[in-house]
Image 1: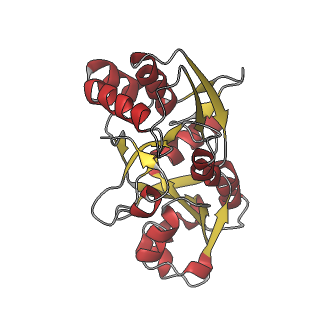
Image 2: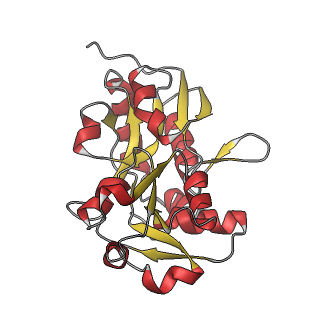
Length: 240
């Protein structure tokens, strides 16, 4: 397949998943991944970026069909690399369990959850947390899939499920932004097969020129003082 040239304009798809990406009340897009992408694309000469919001399970099909050229960061796995290309890692993050206060004493870990045969776990459809939960002892028939972070969180709040598994910092940011009470988050290391999982921007496999330019700019920018300040503003200063 012939590699496409670097475009002057890029359509960038992202989720509604603060602090990484979200839509402001005025309709503009923000978040650590969004700002990082804007900085990197500007550095490689892209003149315009259009942001579009999708559900997680649209990311890979949208790249394959070229509805967009680049996506927000998501976890890099061997199966996903068969379908799309990833940038160099832009973060490494552990998961967390979101639970209601009244069940917090018995839902602090994968082992706690797996030991309760009637407990149900929420995940976002297509994300790596479902296989991570299964690897850590949660039976598949106890896992409910939802289209978005908001839907999965709502399911915990209303008692439809007992816990929701996703990136711990995303839980904490969502709770803070939405003023939610009566919820707790417990870090649950062990989501990755070979250590904490890493995420990168996603690309169509024919866009290797764009990917190469992005990786070159990332190499120069990641770890710099402006990048550390960006992470600090979004509460991600401890991430790598």
